[in-house]
Image 1 (cartoon, rainbow, N blue to C red):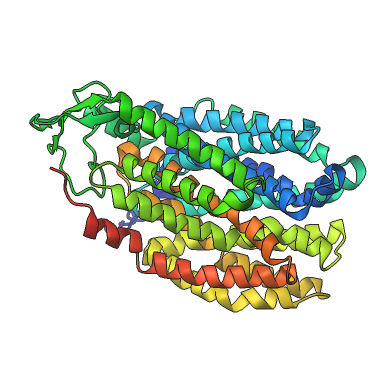
Image 2: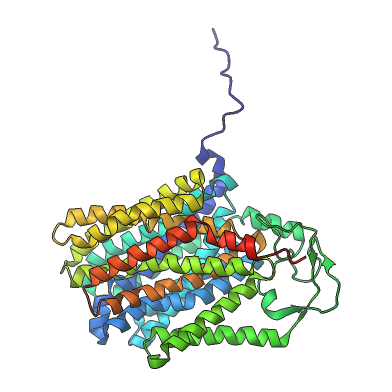
Amino acid sequence: MDRPPRRTDPRRRPRWYRQVGRRGWTAFAAAWGGYVLDGFDFVLITLVLTEVRAEFGLDAVQAASLVSAAFVSRWLGGMLLGALGDRYGRRAAMTASILLFSLGTLACGLAGSYGALYAARLVVGLGMAGEYSASATYVMESWPERMRGRASGFLISGYSIGTVLAAQVYSQVVPALGWRWMFYLGVLPALFALWMRRALPEAEDWEEAIAETAARPNPFRPLFTRPLRNAPAAYSPAGNAPDAGRPAGTGRGSSRGPDAPRPVEVFSAGRAALHLGLAAGAFGALLVLFTGRAGDAAWPLALFAAGALGTLAVRLGSPGHRVLYLALTVTVFAGFLYTWPIQALLPTYLKTELHYTAGQVRDVLFWAGFGTAAGCVLAGFTGDRFGPARAYALTLTASLAFVFPVFAVHDDLLLLGVLLFLLQATSFGISGLLPRYLGSHLPVERRASGLGFVYNVGALGGAVAPLLGARLAEGRPLGQSLAVLTFGLSLLVVLLIGLDVPGRLHRLADRDPS
């Protein structure tokens, strides 16, 4: 006798990984591969810092500046490649970013001086910024809305896997062939990533936004135009003005409707010159600051750079998102300050204060990197379950229990590895929710450029962190300095994200410009 067909409960959904679909998983695989390369290439300089310092005769601050160099250029790469992603699609920006940081990595291996190596690291930073903004927006816009916490967390885990692979390669390659071969090998996987991305589908959200407006967004419009005085606001639901895209403030999470009036705008040579001057001045000031040449002008230059970048953030936000862009940037800056003292200077701490061998450093970094990857995956599930802000704050609070114990262990390699696993899982790992947290505040038509700018300007905290750690270590042990920085700044980020300070300020200060 044939059995009757099994009845399926219409209320039961397929398992979450089936709901993502083939297109979503294809997008994730390509972007995740890029993040693995990103982590591999970016962390190389931290692994070989002692060897580079010895070859070029650098002091501690100069050596730390090589880590900071990539952060100096990241804000520019995030802005340019993010705008490329908004205007021409996420795929084009992803490909350009891989080419840039691969060429920069090769140039690092060929560098014959400190200056050449620093310049190569600037190129790495340009590419890394674009990889973050383009890949993060691409994957999240290819996954269902309710699963974007998982998309965010899973994606960032690729960076951690890249750092683990780099540590494994370091222990085999550097003792036998020297530090330059680490960078030569770092270029090869880029060919694979480019091959993977050759036939990717475009992100669904971006395609829908372009089809709906019948025009390509121009994220730089607020930097080069001004509202025409005494002109009535023009309705442009279809973006019929050249390069208009949607009116500022439309898209998911926006307070403005698709039929909101858009002020008539004209090109302003004065405004364009002002913003180009601010961008060039900020870049120059950061170069002087992070190469240790500022001297007594350090504080004036730092204030100028902060003011210039803050002004650009406000202008890029345009009416309706000005305070939001600035608040998100400050939040990311604080986030990098708490994660990057350990990320940048842990290998140096292990080799100089604990006197670990290359093999021991590899083992410790394996635990740290694997912990970060596990934390990113966990963050994806907790972010979807509790919301990104609450999950971030609670997990980061738990990480405080492991900070000082990590730097109290000296001779027990296994205990140190376990503690680092737990610390990185709950501290750096939870930052896998940052793309989700930031992207949820930004409209689709400016998501790549907005995410690229606020994240990568905030990433200057990663440039400050190793220099700050090195400065503090001049009067006390490096391990103690790293513990104090990590603990104190983690508390600050708990408050900023846990209370959703950027969202609150946005609702309080940014009014509907219509």
